[in-house]
Length: 139
Image: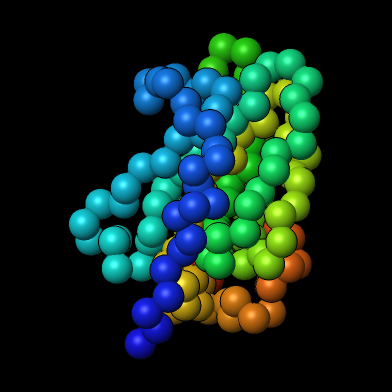
């Protein structure tokens, strides 16, 4: 059993959203329900405002994330999206997020993404964010 954990210091530099009811610009983390805590470290939401925003700085935390990237209309409605997988990074990187872009993610504990998604973290080290092929058992 692996005893490593995701690096919490990487989260400290991220701004947090002030509203849990509306999709607002910012970053918010949520603890998973008890039945998922053994595999999921955190759920998170990152959204950009409706105006041009600079690229998002992603700090390395040693974890894999399953991410749903979508658009948010001015009225708050969720638009089309893409399911992505982000492997562990060894260095910071920037991710472009156009106006009204939102990311909803599940950050897995080390080695747990492989158990849930069947993807080896070693194959995605420093690969950035790639399209996720989700197993039929999860769909």
